[in-house]
Length: 165
Image (tube, rainbow, N blue to C red; front, side, top):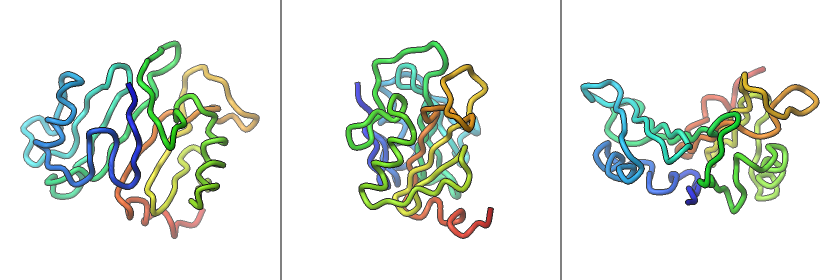
């Protein structure tokens, strides 16, 4: 199974701007979902899994619409037949630096000021390169591969663009 990243529009069947009910229906084929807060008024997030890939669907602000979707690598020693694809590259098996070079080749800017949390403003893609698990690492200690990827709306990372490091 493939989950296609479509920044800044969504991931697979989950589209930014969906209502909570639409998002729940979109992920229902994967199994049970947990809504936070439990009473769902207003919902802030939904958590589910597409096989071994953990999925967080965020409804920030009013809780009326999906604002971001984050997918998490299955973890050390776990395998999955689910591929999370960005322009044909599996984000969890392609080395992070290769992903970033390809993104730059598309004309995107990859902001690496926070090496554990690089992002692509305007697109909006965010990555995590942090884990306590025993994984291959590059010379500076970061994991070779990203451990999560987030697709947000076009202005999702605007607050980070002007940050001084």
